[in-house]
Image (tube, rainbow, N blue to C red; front, side, top):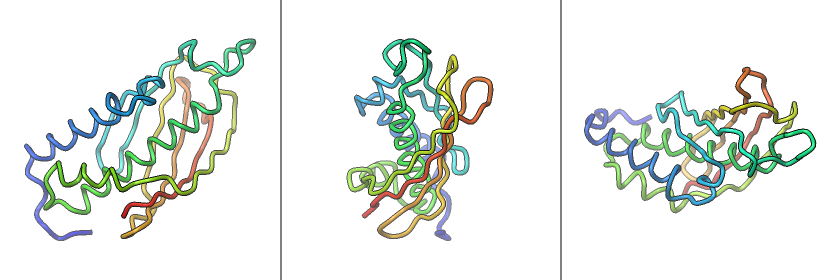
Length: 160
């Protein structure tokens, strides 16, 4: 981690606002998912999606489509890396941190489906397990509104 002074509060707020705007409004597929960012704090990266007919994979059982789970966890991994990258480089302003996003890409993604995707809403979380100069790794969790673990994920992303 960097030993620089923390990012000034106004610049941190600018970064957080830009990051939420990117993930909720500028990434069109996240809009389809209905992804709503709940937290972009280091160690607490969370989002919510509400069940809606467009996300159902099994109409007879009303289950969430597995692709929705996978895409949500992938997005969360990327979001966690952006948050961790900002914390690692507190001397960078919001736009410098956001500029790193265009260099990121998923290079490996594994999803373990543990239960049926049944619920009124779902919470996805992610944590960075390694933030290297070129590759970052994350672990993600996806739970329903009753707190049942629906799926876990692990991913690697190119960051430079």
